[in-house]
Amino acid sequence: MVPRVVVDLSKANLKDPAILNAAGYLYSPILDKYNMGEQSVDFVYLANELPSFNMPGNLKQLYNYNTWLKLADKAQCHPLFTLKEYIGTDADRSSAMNLVRITNADLDTDDFGALQLDKSLVFVLETNEAHGMADQRAFFFKLEEMGLYVPVIVKRSYSFNIKDGSMLNVIRNTSNVQPIENLQLYASTDLGALLVDGFGDGIWIDAPEVATDAITSTAFGILQATRSRISKTEYISCPSCGRTLFDLMETTQMIRSRTSHLKGLKIGIMGCIVNGPGEMADADYGYVGSGPGKVTLYRSKEVVKKNVTSDKALDELINIIREDGNWIEPA
Ligand code: SF4
Image 1: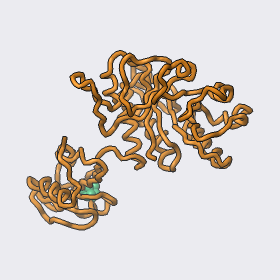
Image 2: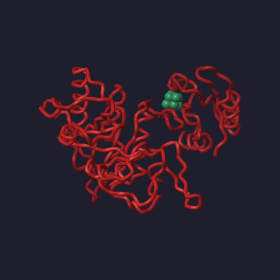
Image 3: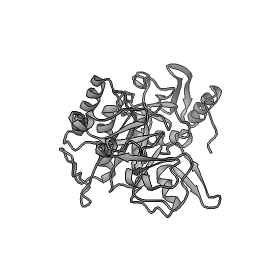
Image 4: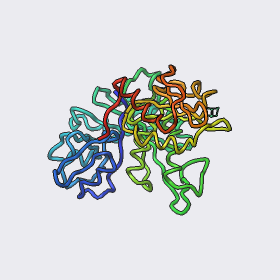
């Protein structure tokens, strides 16, 4: 299964179904229905707050254990326990899925020794350590040494100084940067480093000062970049240099504007034919500058059309994608 995405909506206005737009569920007031996008989260954490509208049928909700206990309708709702709550509550668990907050340090405690493992158990791995990624990595190694194969959602919490956007809980600090940019930097290195090594069955980014839609797109962006869950078209473009034969940013933007709905395709956009084909590595298609105003188009590593004039090159690229059966009309 691909890694799951959790976002926290416990502080949102739970009287308004449109808040789910930020989690990838687009609410239509006329139809009173939700449309799922490519980046729809799998779980929302509601802590102790109850929404006053019906949630989409395919969106799971996480509640703190004591609140979950009191829910009249527990369909699609799952409890989030502390370790102590979980080992003391034999009778009152979900038959489907129970999530337990845990840290690396917990693995050495008597509470962990008392834990009874079953298939409904999922760990939510947190950390309070300054070197959070290393701490969480150590957790995965220990789990493997113990031979325990319990799914783990990796959770990281980030707080920001609102005045200058700097982060409050990191060792290195990047001030005078917007919180979203700092979040992208830190979350991608913290979570991405684990995911590329195959650790983690889900991610949960907690950043109260950052808008939920930005957290959602950062989470899916990290999964895409680590190739663990593909939710959009991927563009591989060269950094550009003296050899670049077209405006790379403008061209990338133009290609994105017509192909960004082709989920799962990788398109290489390279400034020159000298090094471009090598640099675009595993792209499915390539758009490579081959002379002033000329572009050569690739299918994987194979040249399909040479020296197409740049005003026709994007249409030609789309034709190649269409011939391969990989084109879908934009919605
Ligand atoms: S692909 Fe060509 S233009 Fe792009 S960075 Fe490499 S050498 Fe420069």
